[in-house]
Length: 553
Image 1 (spheres, one colour):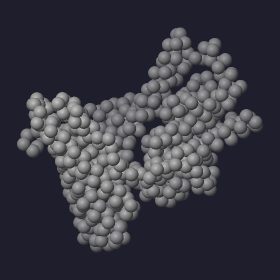
Image 2: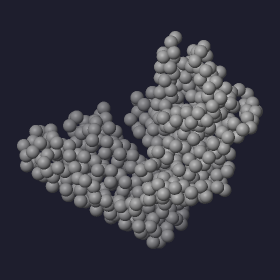
Image 3: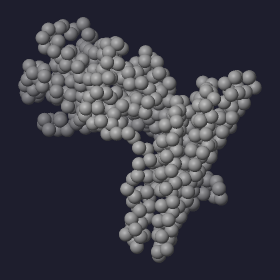
Image 4: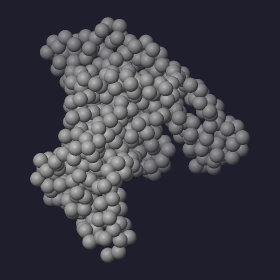
């Protein structure tokens, strides 16, 4: 087999590894992302628990980078302290290393099981949580399969005459090997994938342990760079956490590299074979960083804050900033362009409403007057855009329109009205509950808060479905949205039953927060109904709506 064909097979196997990792992470984020974020917010208030929480979240998401970005956003909005956030990210690095350890075992028997079970779930159900569970299982199956393919694709390299030359050169120049590994990891956007590739090559005898450890250290540096690059446009406080993690990982990796070069310590005690030695070195390095980080995290975070200030001082965030309008008067005589412009503007309203819906629940946990006013200002933006879009579409309807254009115009007007109503519910009702809870110093019971958080997460997920339907006009997604509305009605009944059971038991916190709890559920249910109604024009157009109910299908 020629060298180019071998490299092509290896590239294909690596591509499958990256795709599979992304599938697992996407499935977890879509199915459990909001719940995981909420739990992480509460745990991060304790710096010692932050390390463990970060590790667990990284195992779930198979990505320390994703955890760094999530925690950085929490720190940026003041939900958690920067020191605790940095500790959580150091814990996420440990969790990411444990994922590598788990995947280094012989798990090939799980490949067909995961692929079959995941495909069945993905094809026979319309429930969002089961669909994403199917995605996760398919991703795990493909991930294990990709590792086998990497091993098979790299087997012919044993007979290569060029590879020993490259390996010998890199073994003699560890600094170059270190930097190459960092660049490769950044290009992969996944330290897990990069290290698994190194381990797979080592299992075939292509990478000696000394070079492998250098590559692992380089991959750790590259893994820290990824989050810093992806967060470069975030507010200053949100950038400080990933930068602090890069400082810790980068300094630690360079110190370890220097020690390897100067002292050449024996590495055989790390494991029974080279792959095990590399994986254990990776885990040991990140555990050491987490332990060292416990006393140093505060100092490193303050340094990261100073560096972000020097790089680009943060500007006050203006949530109600004016945006350039897409409603061009020049396009009115071309209805197709005018409707496209109106769609762009309605999508912006969708984005604003999504921010409002996401942040209002954060205020139930930690509210202050500044954040409440900022959220209310977003509703003012929604109102302004709502009025401008209605006026623009009224001008469009004064021109000759085709039947499809007239239908789309009415659909956009209806969507805009519903979005404005959602904004009003959030500001006039839910913010009133937030103020009441804040002024009276009330707290939900753990069970009550879990119910609210879970219900809110479902409504937020349905909101995103509704916004997708508005743009794509996909009948399957529209049908799923209406089905989710029916399922949410059953969830609301179960929550009410559970709440009243706590009231009968005389739970003090339930008695104090009963009105806020029930009114919030009612408001979220009303929001969900308004957003689900955005699917009706699509369903009606495809003959999937009978009266006010879905047709059988």
